[in-house]
Length: 104
Length: 187
Image (tube, rainbow over all chains, first blue to last red; front, side, top):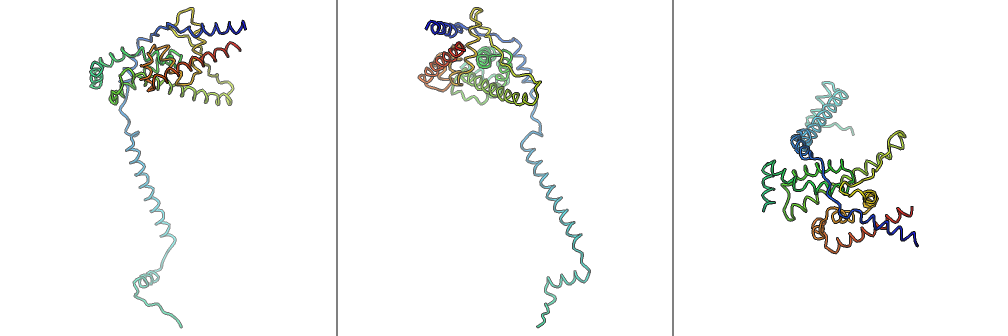
């Protein structure tokens, strides 16, 4: 019981320890530091802007699509090689210049 | 009217007006942040950040509250943001310390407020440790009332709460502090 009272007394003293607390003073150069940081502030870089990022992404996509298309065309042209007669046959077939012949 | 003039002058790029604003509010901002961060260097750095923020955001200040209230809100939000970042770094430091045994452990230094009279310094150090453990809202109400000497009405405006809520927060803060201090002595 005695100990409890003693503890409560200590706690009360601690709770009252900040009564009458005075304002703390800070370093007088803080304003100069704020001003120098304000003056340091650079213009935002063009590379960091949203517009630049979007434009960059679109150009990259455009270049990629073109590269893929060129690659596919080249691949196709190397795979399929026709003789002159075959090419003529294909054209005539496409434009119905040659009727199909069916054996009964 | 003076407040409006000051804002208009700052917005037009008048550096002297900004210095006037700094002189008016820097001590309040510094002492508020000091109450939260409990570290002089951190409080000074954060005061700089807060004034940079004020300078940048002044154009968006709607004047539906006083400049004083608005600045207190920025100071409180920035203080909590700072503490959250610090605890995040602390957690990361803990993870790092698992892998690198040689790393120094993060230590919370004991804070002695420079505005406390000499005979109370030791007791105040214990109290500030206990204040650190309070939930955010209780801590804000307690710091604004007991360290910044704001009236209940002013705290209501800063915290956007009713008077009864603020009274309740301060009452709960005091009860919690009693519990924390009791635990401290029982150990």
